[in-house]
Amino acid sequence: MAKKKPVSLEGAVKTDAGLNYKGVIMETIVEKCEGCDRVVPFEDASYCTTYAQPALKWTKGKCNFATHTREAEKGTKVKVNPLKASKRAARGR
Image 1 (cartoon, rainbow, N blue to C red):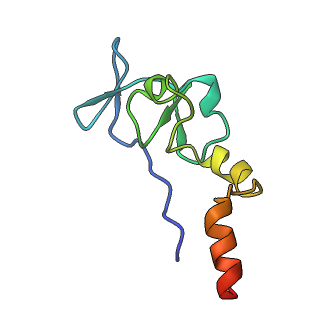
Image 2: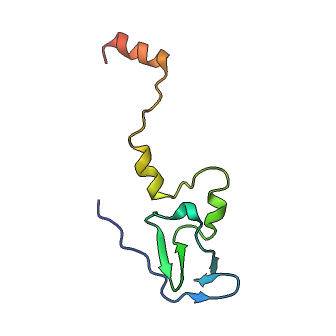
């Protein structure tokens, strides 16, 4: 699977409300977004190319678009249901 090319914010206009890109007002990223692959710098600030209001994605836990949090999760163990595990063991799987 080939990597996607990075998104550029070409044609974006800076306004008082935020960054206007293709008719969508984008807000700057929050501290928790630092290190994500989806963050693109534009002039003096950084913006998320996937979600226009990144602060809202972090209000109820972690952002599901964040690429830097997925890397840390890969090493965690998955909880296995003991009942299902015993049935699998009995069948010889």
